[in-house]
Length: 135
Image (cartoon, rainbow, N blue to C red; front, side, top):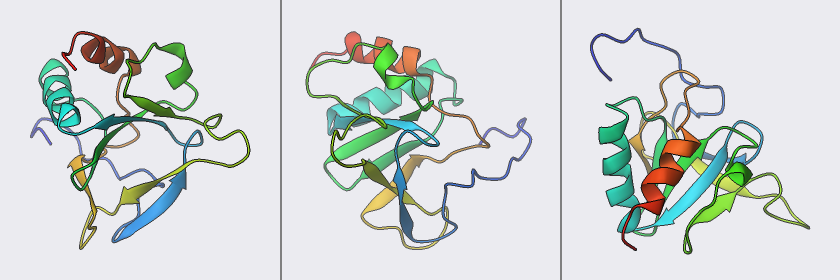
């Protein structure tokens, strides 16, 4: 966190330790990008947002999850290979993602960038970066 920022408590959907499943579409939608592309996209997003990018989760060596405003994923066009998880993802079942705690052991999940207050990733900025990225 930048030193000129005021500390904000973590969102209520973040467990203090370990990890928990959270239903997408309630507190956030999730954009899932395969690695290593997800790491490149995260680095570009962090640079473009000057460190104010919102929460990003890394799942071992498979996926990067970018958490955007609930209900906003369907407003953007996403490239092939990118999966949007929303409240409408599962027609017969709900979709959940793992959320790591801020402290302690969280394997296989960890924060690439932890949440700061209620701020989420800007979906339009993320979609733009993904559109201009070589796949």
